[in-house]
Amino acid sequence: MRIHVSTDIPLSEPNDSSGLVTWFSIDIFPDDDAPHPARIGHARVARIHIGSALDLNVPLLDVLDADSGELEALHDIFFENDWPKDEYLEGGGNDALYIRELVIDPAHEGRNIDLALVRRLCDTLAQGCTVAILPYASRRDIDHWTPLGFVVTPPGAAEGYLHLLLGTRTARVDDPDRPGVFKILPNPSPEAAKRHH
Image (cartoon, rainbow, N blue to C red; front, side, top):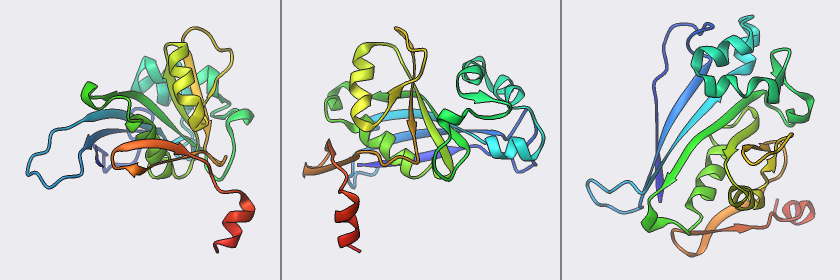
């Protein structure tokens, strides 16, 4: 399988109303040579450019509010003084990745394509981010995402957010047995990883 990523980025310098949140449209396609393959899933993902907002002296709340009420709702939970709260700072980054929607075609459900997609996005689009954020609406959502390393964000409720600290080693997701059927694989221990280098 493969993903196609598209976005619309202004060439002018970012300001409090534009350019400090980048939305990506993600389409998932089968890995075949058909001229017009059918999309089997899609997602909408935002990268919040926290470091750039700080450099431009633009309050983060203004950045989130200018984008949407959905992103503004993240402010008091994840951020303080225009910066990620200490509990969400880990690793070498300071931006945040927000996964708004992730839909898999019913014919392809149950194959963990969504887990594979989010892991791949965390490895690529989220380089330089400290945290990935994902809304949840049920206990089933929590149970689905925690094996990938996501945890419930306090205060936790029937609906809320999950987050993944991107500086932490997270589970790998691959399709080693059947192409297109993904499973979570354990990370090698640090000792085993050293032996391979």
